[in-house]
Image (cartoon, rainbow, N blue to C red; front, side, top):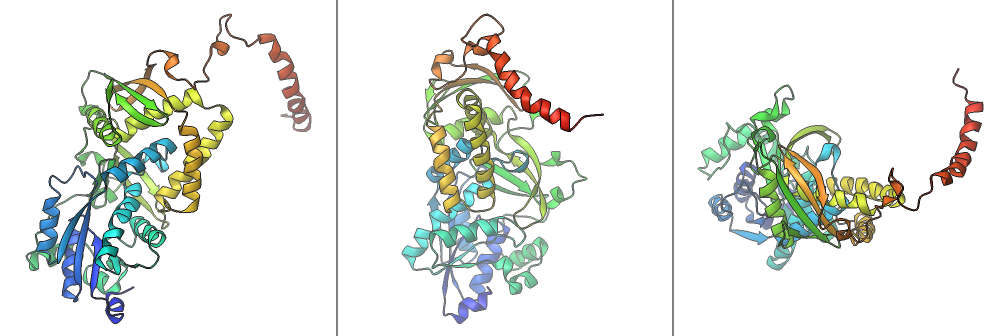
Length: 417
């Protein structure tokens, strides 16, 4: 869709998601010049790379937006982040889907405001080569099929005028726009309290080590303290309720975990050469200290609780949901159904686990208040090398004879000579 297609339909007002960066400034002013009344919406996701979100509002008004609205999304993102943890939904290479899950939350937070204001078109500044355009599009289509979605980066008029960052920066400078970005930036960053994504710029050259990236949510592991720190997280029916003996709400749990894990380099600098949904590869450097720490504690408890059949199901659901979230299908029937199955598992995740943090690693230390703190634990002394438990060694004789029948038959038909 091109901008003049909207104009031909008689559309005069348009509203969109903005972060206050280079694309936001350029698109907002450019659409205003095309005759549209532009309203900008910024969702507060407690972005650690933005000191004051009100600065974004001022920036957008300075780019000729008729209004710039701040929308709260922290509660919704915390709840979605918990779902990611419960599903252990990490995409290729360990990426916790922190940006991917934030996109549908952003759309869900903005659309009611568009409807209330009578704005028929939703715009975003996502590149035509990335995943985010899919996430914004699909979330919008599923939540409000009637709303039009306009993407400047898929409009040939916009692309011809702004083939790259250089042209956008020149445009903003020419029009004296309150530009935050600069031509000297070596990479771009997208952030929320679950994590940061670093990409583009010099990071596109894989011959350059990524260590020039300056962490925002913590430190590189080698810059972490030499002394370990022990952290105990208590869970109740799949929800973290205490950190180091202090009760926490869900949002505060992520924030506290970010501070604790970040200072030890946990979840800082995850390097992924990933397969984008559009079919190309990209390089991302990720920061996700809090969700890495909380996620590890959850996984350690799962090891006590799941038998092998439930574990196989969980692994399948986890992989499925990680791809669903990455590809923008958070709101579809498949994701909703898979998450209900995950909920059947997470309701049994109750207990405390203590971990040792040291220079980027999270190691299991002990379970709190002994094993009794995990009421649904299947771990017993049956596997002991001592004379303990109800498992009789001699009972394995018949078990192995049964297994051996098919093994011998296979060996006869497939001799290894």
